[in-house]
Amino acid sequence: MSTSRKIPFADNKQFDLFEGVPAASKGVKLQTSVKTGRRFVACGAREIYLGSMRLEDYLKHANQRTPLIVSQLLDAQDWAPFEQRYAATGRAPYSPRYMMGLILYGVMQGVSSLRELEKLARLDLGCMWVAGGITPDHANIGRFIVMHEESHTQGFFESLTGSILKASHSNGKRLAGDGTIIEAACSHYKLLKEEAVRERIIKAHQALEKAPDSKVGQKELERARQCQALFDERLAARKIHNGKGEVFISAQEPKAVVQRLKRGRGFAASYKPSVLANEDRIVVAHALHASSETRVMATMLETHYRAACSRTAARSGYFDNTVIQCTLDREISLLCSPDKSSEEVEGEKKFRKGQFQYDAIQDTYRCPAGQDLHVITQTKPTALTRARRIYAIMQLPHARVVLYARAARNQQ
Image (cartoon, rainbow, N blue to C red; front, side, top):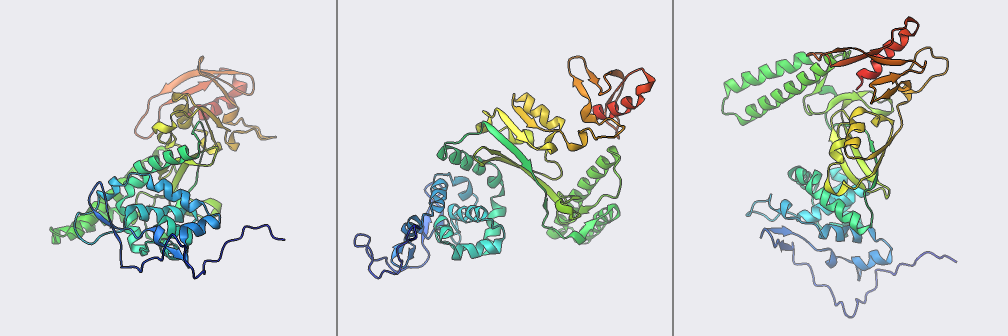
């Protein structure tokens, strides 16, 4: 005998006695915002029926509580910052509350494509409830994301995360950090070298001289200058670190850095997003950097509701002075193992930098051979190099220790 929960049929011809028969739709339903007075399209999830059963009742019978909980959390948010970005006149746009519900529910289901979100709003019952029954096309969804980009990553995220932590009785005392690399949405075949970057500036100036009032020409010149500034910055960084190979930049997304992708998929313009999550796997902080996962750790730890964090765990890629220093400044315990390249390799004749123990009080290193390394000289920073403190011992048999002590200290 099956013990699975039975869902009542939704094709009962008799409606609930006390609910009454739903009235026929009279077209688009508009809702006036209390704070801004702007009118928005808001169909209303409570008016959606599945046969003779309300959608809400059907989800409860099917034990699908997630859409109901997500909808309650979104209803509790302040939507005034979103609503203020719309003009007071003109055709009524979709309600920001329901547009955000569609995007958030789609992300929870692993859907990120705009066309797939459009399809989800029309076919998924849970999405219908969270999105209030609206059915925007992919262009409307894309414009909404671009218009409210600032709110997505700052105030709204913090407000929603605070509501989730409160509703789940969770906290942010113990966090874990991780990052990945995602390929930018630009063509791999339109990467520019230094010569092409300079030539683009020249062509943009020539086009603007022919048509000084052209807005298209002005925007193109602005994009070309931005591209050149970012290229020069990366070229200078490459020289400082003695990097080899040519520097490339994307003409479409100059902020994306051409770097190695995961799983051996070669090189492409990409970004490195990072997150902090608590023990209940709730993401409490996120940040995006073009090329570094470690530089954003301090930013992710700054928000007020994460000030109570007492312990942070991270993988070996975060074993970096920047991360260590930002956790020390906030009196946070950092659990992070050294990189594998710092571990001793059996049979190797060289010492790895992770094998040297640093004494911050004495400002000395203790090498695996049992010798203490002291500062013998310091170099000042130049346009192409960083400041260096060289550690060494005076005994000749341990000259190899001198070289690797330099490498260890230069990383700081």
